[in-house]
Length: 165
Image 1 (cartoon, rainbow, N blue to C red):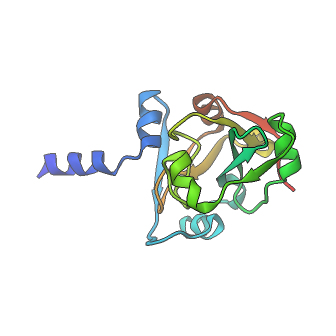
Image 2 (cartoon, rainbow, N blue to C red):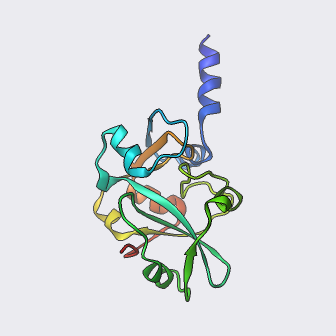
């Protein structure tokens, strides 16, 4: 019986969790009931966590055709001009929802900057610098993870910038 629980727990791990564990980065796992995509504000409200601590992951493509990841407060909107400037592109456009899985390996509502198919240049909104810890998607719908902001920046080789409206 005990072995079965261990096996089930292993199966429940996402790529993001495996990467954090491999890098010896502590995180707290939060789960909530959710059968399909829900917006980040609704998800964090279900968990009873502070809105300003929760961030969403967006993927954009630049004029160069390169992909970029932007991690911003869950209730905010990405400023495409500021985002483009932060990654030294003429312009960036968010990718279509249908492309998320193909580009990142994750699905809408479960996209996290940790453990995508490829490590894209990642920019985190500068407000994260003032937070000891940050809550992001855990890599699956209904799963959020909280980790120290500096650990997130380090594991994804992220940089901070003003990228919201």
